Image 1 (cartoon, rainbow, N blue to C red):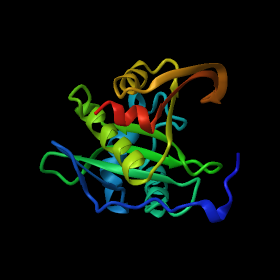
Image 2: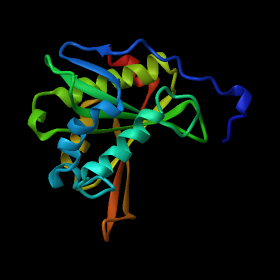
Image 3: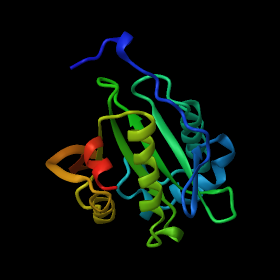
Image 4: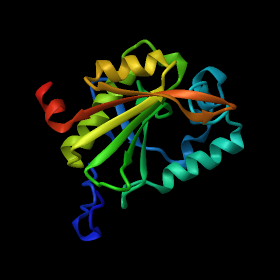
Amino acid sequence: MLIAASEIQIPQQPPYPIHTKRLRLRPVTVEDLDAVNAYRSQPDVVRYLPHPPQSLADTALTVKSMAAQSPLTEPGQWLDLAVEFGESSEPVGEVLLKWNADNPRLGEIGFVFNPEVQGKGIAFEACTAALNLAFNDFGWHRIEGICDARNDKSAGLMTRLGMRREALFVESDWSKGEWVSLLHFGILAREWQARG
């Protein structure tokens, strides 16, 4: 169901950075180019993403697009949050929130992290902060997550976040020269709030 433009409320942007126990989340800026390219250029990192390993020039275009979409001002945009860990201001990963173009109370979450920080709970902590932002600040009703069915780490993270596996779409996406099956996860605001 489409929502009338007059009913769309621009998400309330929090003061950035968002602080967690160990992390800081803030919108990606063009100054993040080298740090973002450090992981987006790695074949293992982008194996299940829709693009090949990125050259510095490719990442420059990606980062420019990310920076241009912050803050969220209209449905269909992505808010790409850089995740800082420790003393460094360089991102170790990103958490993305997409504002649904057809229904502004719905969204999607995505994430990508440098392998150097995997296995430390950083992705879980960052995604928890992003879901809090989406539900508490933006007022979204439902968040979805989609991953390649072979991506056990992403599926496991969404499960740990309390997202429910809702569907497996068999060979529903053509990516990098092959048909790919996609897992769809979802969580409602009331389910997120009930987790405490």
